[in-house]
Length: 433
Image 1 (cartoon, rainbow, N blue to C red):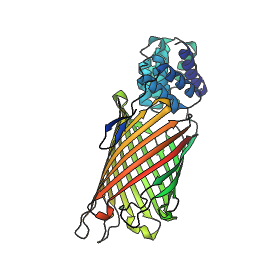
Image 2 (cartoon, rainbow, N blue to C red):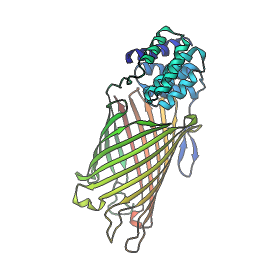
Image 3 (cartoon, one colour):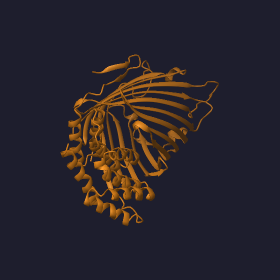
Image 4 (spheres, rainbow, N blue to C red):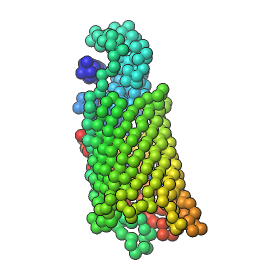
């Protein structure tokens, strides 16, 4: 039956379709905004349809959204946006676009049917029945009417589970870091070095709601081997809903090495809740608790726990997609009379993302982190770290992209040894299977 539903999606996508330089904003801070290049919405829509038929949902969604931003406002576009969001499990956005689709009387039956499927995925059988009954009353298309009747007859049965799906991706990068050890420029030990960076990640959908994530990360310097870092991570998450909120509890473990020696094992618990707002905005709240163990006695002083509370707001705007984030971090480590390793941190971030012409994407981010350390030997340490990130990525195919990224860090402290600057630039390629 699920195969039949997919064919209905594809049939209506194809059938209905056939019937139809850089501006600096904050010079002092270095934040740039790239204008969204004007695109022909019809061309963007056509590219989106092609990507959809090839199974490249994220690419299809990006082109459909670009067509919408370029002025296309049709029920066909709304329907395709709804299908993309539905298949990506963003049911709040899927409902929004299926409702818009239903405003066209010619597509009302199709819209009600898909709203019924969405309600089933959210566990709302009552709403699903209402939508299927509205679709049955329309009786515009015999094939679709047969599907509606099937759903009504089997509404009490469990929704067919999503088949297990494995997604594998990664990043390979080469770069240069001019301050590997995060020391003052005049310090004798100050060193810059080239490095390679490799990230591999995998996501396995275990059921409609449960998923497993795993990753392996390598950061290898060419000469300063004491700073080499690698980590393997695994976590299990369960996606659910509560009223209009999306819920995601997660448990995981990270194991890392530093300079070729064992470093830490970190057990994590995270709980995130997200809500879609009007005009494609969203709100995210997250709590994270980390239990940190040293795998090498040289790092026993870092053992303990860390708690983080985050609030994040996302909103499309004229200058691009805006993301605002605040995070409070509290540490409880192995302090000594001579040193404090348990900072309280306040982290503020502003990110802008734009889509340019020629399949380019741009990102700019400003971060300010204030770290407050308790009094040690009569001295209270206070660090303020400012970071500017600039990034440009070009999509080569639906699954491969190339990019360049630059990050500048300026850390000031009332302890002179902890004042430094850092420049880090890299070229990279992302891939997804």
